[in-house]
Length: 430
Image 1 (cartoon, rainbow, N blue to C red):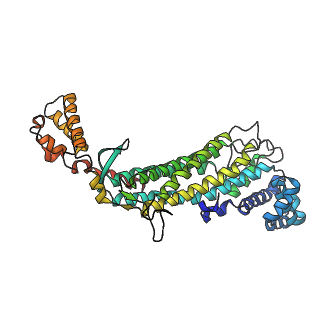
Image 2: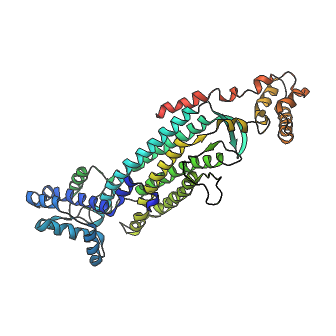
């Protein structure tokens, strides 16, 4: 991923240095369990000390790869040379995927810690602002059209619960990909045995793939990328709401705009929702990567490497992007300006037509058939909107509404009387 969208904490986990360091950890753990595998033979204590002290440089491995045209073989050559005579035990009984897939699980475990921390922070930020605006009255929209009053806190509470579900999905996805395999060329342990694999993976803090066939099955990685794409879609839903609410005609919310910032190179008055638009745009990349992850699942027979080149792109890019977008959204939600007065102004745009359901139900309670009541309210509500006349005034002048308690009907309090109860559900995920 390009530096523009990479937070250092996560970017460092996907460097060549970090990747090869996980290879080294796997190779060392495998060597440490060789004496038990070989019945006391294998590397002696002094050999193990030399293997643990063996080093590599990315530059040396890259130079060696120009000869071998095989990155793992090049790495093993460099690490083994650094260990001296003890280096002959490095990669003993292993195949490349034993190291690559097990090391990838170690990388993803570290990446998961960072991503999940951000996912939790997003939930907390949304919940905090939802509580702040529990009673902030605004219009609810369906199909982009004014429907009935709601509160901004209820809106944000819905986003918070979705973020919480995505947090849990990400937890599950990172957990199920935390598996390795040390099973040999086609997964039959021809050069080792299952107990050896279990001991090596235990040293590394990983679970065992049930049947690794040389590689860890890629449905696991597809599940992870799918969870990331879904989390990105949730972030985009928040961003889309902000983009709409910041439009000039609406102006109920504005994303943060710091001192010195410029909205347009040509029009000094502009304050554009660039943060929200960036979130919406980059979420598309996450969804596209999920398709590539699905394509990686059906490998040939016990293995091929068609997945390898794809994963070198989509795993770093997807995790780095999600981490970036989560923190971008946290900043957006934490710093956005909520224009409560504008929200109240917008509630008046339909001249009371959004109280139509309240009028409908009142007429039904008073004895009208539902269809008759519906036609009456539809007619008057449309007139209110089209002619800019208060619906309440039209009802006061219409004999069909005689006897209705208009004070009770045209009360915003009716719509928000459960707001505190709804937002209080956030306590379940606090």
